[in-house]
Length: 108
Image (cartoon, rainbow, N blue to C red; front, top):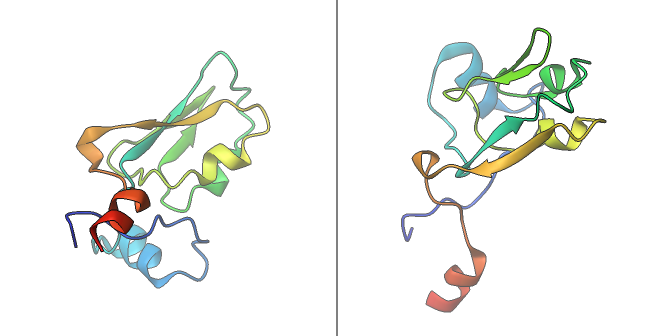
């Protein structure tokens, strides 16, 4: 509706059927949020928390965190879990347009 999505997935991969289908079977069940995770290598201490927290298996740590752009859905779970604040979400137009609820409310 209105060429926008209506939810940003940030649930856990152990119980979400959509994430399971996408990560384990390649079924495109979820669309990106319009953002992508971006690590700051100067702040990253390679603790691996972001890697284990990412429900899409998009973050890999080998000396520092790196994000697989194709797999990242921009959910922000890695950002919230990083104790060093070395992860951020950045707008990426190639990932679509994020939902703006103010625009949606104005059109109804």
